[in-house]
Length: 226
Image (cartoon, rainbow, N blue to C red; front, side):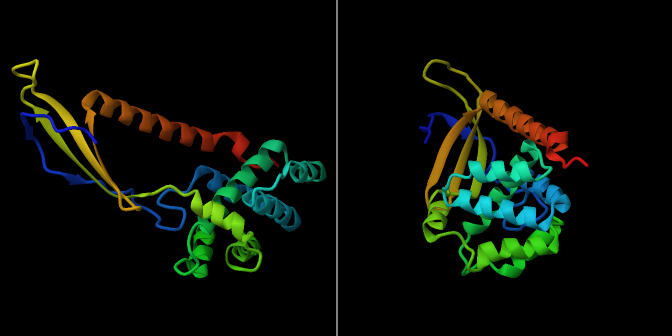
């Protein structure tokens, strides 16, 4: 928490940050790129191969070594290592996010509708659903580890701009800074000060990450080749 600076006048009231629009499913407002790539890729994968990949993914969620299983799938199918990597990565992310949610509030119908929006084949949706809601759900220790490793999420975000009229070293500074406050899902609140230069650096890095994610989605490595 940043210390209060004497001689500051509020330049603007706190504003509430709002999340992006769009979908509001269990994967969040923006579907992870590896899940989107997987959803496109599985449309060209046979049912038996899909189920083998799903078994490998569940074993990975339970902390088991899956190198040999992946190697066997690669040797018995026409999928490259890169294609297997993004298929398993997408399945892993999808199941991990679903298994983090308590069954008391997470409805199977909602889960299936979200997968339909991703255009995942109906047979595969049934298999995914049996993992999350049925008797094929990963062992309790694995599921507990998944839920236990979840970090607190941001529930509220506020900000305001302050201007330092003077400091101990300068009689007239008029230097703006940004005060931010985050409330997390675990009940904690964090207040901190961000200089304008650091805020501009944050904006630049966020834009750079979004651009790299979009570039990654367009790469041929994320598409099943005929």
